[in-house]
Length: 201
Image (cartoon, rainbow, N blue to C red):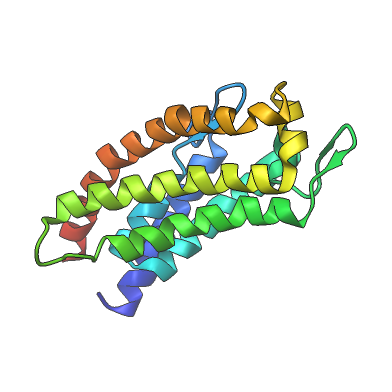
């Protein structure tokens, strides 16, 4: 793929990411205690089609949209993603920026690293499914790990649970929200990758 095509497809995927982030209930789906998202899908596709660098760029757009959403349309846990939001005596800080950006960028990096593996031994569709699941799960796990590492007491308080119950709560989110997002990615991303590859050729 030449440079102009790469830039064109990167721009397209960034545009899709922005549209998903901007349309209510399309990119961010409120579930009360957490927002489910479809914003990881263009990031995964970018990583698999264009590579880990471009995947990280689209992931950065995802992360920035999360930071902005949690700044201007906050909920009780927005301090996790925005340094400009506070609830009670808890203020978001630089760790909030890390939680908002790094896991989302890692989606694209992981998709770009995993998809090319075993290229000669495994069918592209199977590799795409595997890469989609791992990259999607990584986002969920890294976000929740950041919440537990940097904001354990505040996050537990916002969820109305004891700190001692936080690990169990996080596992429940991973195996509900995390599984749902991974399944969606595994179903949709391979189809999109196949379509993109046909156009690229």
